[in-house]
Image 1 (cartoon, rainbow, N blue to C red):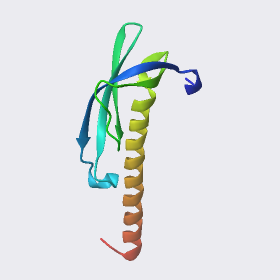
Image 2 (cartoon, rainbow, N blue to C red; image 1 turned 30 degrees about the vertical axis):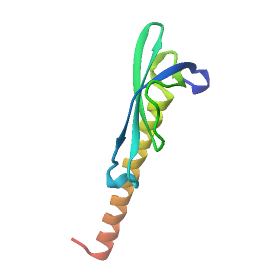
Image 3 (tube, rainbow, N blue to C red; image 1 turned 90 degrees about the vertical axis):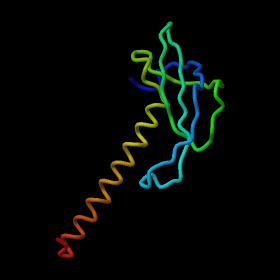
Image 4 (spheres, rainbow, N blue to C red; image 1 turned 180 degrees about the vertical axis):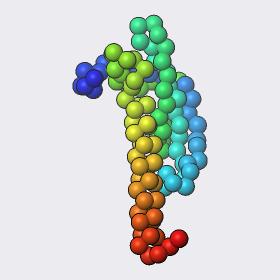
Length: 106
């Protein structure tokens, strides 16, 4: 569904904790923020990462897919970031493999 048709709700920060990131994320770490929200009496949760800590119990605006309320903008951004990291690593590995073959590495 087109994200311009997504609806907005209030989400509550459930937990916020520091996580050291693996070397391939090119950083020292980030905060993993777990949140929850309620749509039509049903409870949903998600998580995202940020370099800035969030206060547990605080609220923020969250856009979600009304046809699939468990899909929300924050969780999708986190999945996309992980996918891009994996794709970048795959490209680097492929480049080294091709270069190695060209140079006669076994």
